Every structure is written in structure tokens, then in C-alpha cells.
Image (cartoon, rainbow over all chains, first blue to last red; front, top):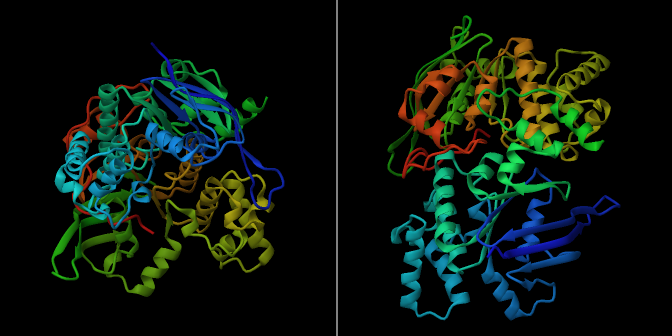
Length: 276
Length: 285
């Protein structure tokens, strides 16, 4: 039953950086599999490669080498237009900043309608009904659909971004820090919404975040990355309760929690441990 | 309050005037808060709750179309009625600000050394000033002092820059530090380091602090008391332990219960609570 919806093996990606001779290894021999219907969290700090991994998966970056397949179909650089469109339908992405992905002159309902026009043969009336249904499924109304992004709150805009991702009826949604910029009360609502939609539609998530508490709330499995490499992987219970990598221990130690005090020198101490 | 009073905010109100209708949109509603010498208070709340706007009022840098009433007594003087020249002197010597974005404090075309030296005009001797700048950087845990002094802001990481800004803020030994989400833009490991440095330096130098953040656990770790804000009001003030173990206001209880935690215990989110109904005014700088 548990077939893999995403299979990535030996993925490499380097970037040339101006002023530096050596290219930066953003992804260094990364392998991940995501089971169908599960939520895989990818955790790491700035420069860990977590966003590059997401961008390669949705086709916003091309890989240097390695294998990537979604629902059994290999993703290659030379996809034909039709295959690109199929891939775009299969994998949708939600970004941290909804403002960056919504046209500020376009009512948000029209933004969702664009996706329906791109992927489905529907009449105008069918699309209108579908847009309303999608807005309802993320807790918004037709009145919200008529609004411009500027007239919605951050949480509402992120719901629109999620509705739009769902419009393509994808198999996988890649969420890149999708709840990080939200207030805790709004974040809780969006996390609940994501949880519900996954349960009802049998979707899979690749959930990129720096926040281990969010990982605990939403994910089944977790991958810890640093400097482009995978340091640890396992179920959420294994990694958060019984971390093996010193770096995972450092992340857990540094996360604020009740009764916690920040301590100086923790980074240096664990850096030396990780290096050795 | 801990220690004798350094600052007392008394019934501070702020409204933003709509340029067309002239109507006042309330942003702060009767904020009262006493801060002792050497005491640290955390202002916690969600977007639009008025945390940053409170800091802006203390510094006298509220938006142009704001209408403000109430008093902010600082060491016996009302900052709101101080002539601008005297207010400037308070801002330059007695109160220091650390904002979320260190780039806002640093000139991109000048090296770090210049930034730190500008803050110590009282030291006439150039060599002594440079030695003092190096000493300040060492205090905030920077080891490669010479490299950092010569560096330009774009050559340093966010965590490094925030340490430089803290070094600049403490160099004049101000009585009050205003920290507006100072670690929010940093990675979690860097946040722990920078928060520890800020906490240690503040205690060593006996400074008071107002620490603005959306993160209750972080605020609890570096302050003596927490003030929970919502819709421009302080709904509850208490020690971090009181707020954690025995929150009184329903909003505080909601905030404590719905945030995701490392142990994963969290009830479903309420349908609507929290973030302000009106548009956000923005952070301090």
C-alpha cells in the first residue's frame, strides 16, 4: 500500500557565486522518499539547501545530477511542454510570502480561476462554482474571492495560496515555510486546515520549515539538512525524541520552550562536536 | 516592578487620523506600564497588537498622522512634552534601540569600525576609541575583531550584524534598551546565542529593557515580567511563571495553548481570535 509518491536519489545542485572560485554545493547527494499520503518535513537553517530541494522538485531549478521522480514518473530537464504541464498539475507549491505569488491587481478568485483554465476543460459556470467550493474549503467566502490581495490579511492570503494549490488537484504540495510568517493564532488555523485537507484528499506534503514545533504538529517523517547534506532522517518521534545527530540536538536545545534559558557558547561547543 | 522606577507610561493612547474623513483609528488604548531600573519587560502579542507602536511612542517617532495623548515619564521627565533638542539628547545617550533588521542601523557604505566610533564622540584619542570598539566586539562574542572592524555590513551574516548593533547599543551605557524583535530574523541557533549575549550584557550593565516579540517562550527567558498585548491594550501583566502557569486573561490562555510545542500537545485552533481586525501599521523602522 505504502508506495512512494516522491523518490529522490543522489541529487546534486551547485550554484556559482560571484567573487568565489568554488561553486556552492546547495544539494550534496540528497536522497529522500515520501510515502503517498504522508507529510515529510524538511528542517534546516539558512543555507541548508531545503528551499533548493523544493525548487528542484517543482521545476524552478534544474538539477546537476541525480534522480527525481514524482508518482513514478521521472522528472528530467528536457520535459516536453505537455509533460511540464502534467508535472505542474502533480506538484503545487505554497511559498512563505503570499504577496509574492499573488497579482496585486487581480482579485484572488481570478487567480484561482487561472489555474482551473490552465489545467481543466471547464465552462465558465463550472469554474465559478469550483472557485467558490475551493474558497469554502479553506474557510473563505465568495466575498473574499472578489477582493484584491491588499484587502485581505496575511492569513487569508495564505489560505488563498493554499486554495490555488488545491485547484490543480495535485498529488503533492510543497510548502516552503508556508506558516512561518503567520501569527500563532492564524498559524494554528492554517495548520489545522492543512491537516484536514490532507486527511480528506489523501494528499502528500513536503513541508519545509525551520520550526521544530511545527514539525511535531504536522509531519510524519522528518529530514534534517545542513550545508546541503542530509544529517538525519526518520519518523518525527525518532528524530525529535531520540535525535542521533549532534546538530539535531543543537536545534532542539536552541528552540525556545517553557523554562528555557539561552546559553552562550552552545553553537561553538556543538560545532566542534559536529566537526569531529 | 523591580527597583526604583525608571520609566512610567501613563494612559498612553494613540490614534491614526484618516486623511480623508479625519476619523481616528485607535491603535493604542490607554497603555500604562511601570519599568524599574534594571528591570526587563517583555511586550508580547500578535501583529497589530501595538507592541512596536508603544516603542515608537517612547522614542517619539510615531507616524506623522498619529494623535497621541498620555504621559511617558522617564527619570522624572515627561518625554512627550520634552523640547525636540532635549529629546534628541535622551535618544542619543540614555535610550538605545535594537530593531529586527540590523541593516536599518548600519550605513552600507561605511565599515563597522566607523559605525562604532561614531557612537563614542567623547573619546578624543583615535587609538583609544579603536581599542574600545574592539573591546565592545569581544564583549558580544566576536573573536575575529580586526576582520569585523574593517568589514562592510554586506560582508557579515545577520547574526554577526545583530551582535555589532548590540555592541553599538551598549557602548554608550544607556539606561534603557528597546529591543524590537531583535532575533526574529535569525536562525534558531543564532537566535539562542544573540539572546544570551543581549541578556548577559543587559544584566552586567544594569540596564532596563523593553523586549518586543511574538515569541512568549523567548520573552520569558530574557525578561522579569511579561505584558501581553492585544488590539492596542495590555490585557495581562505578570512574571513569566505566572503567565505560564496561571494565565488569567482568556486571550493569554489561548496564546499559551494554541502555539505548536515541541512535545506536540495542542488543541484545535479557535475559529477567530487574535490578530487585529484593522490593517497592520508595520514594525518600528
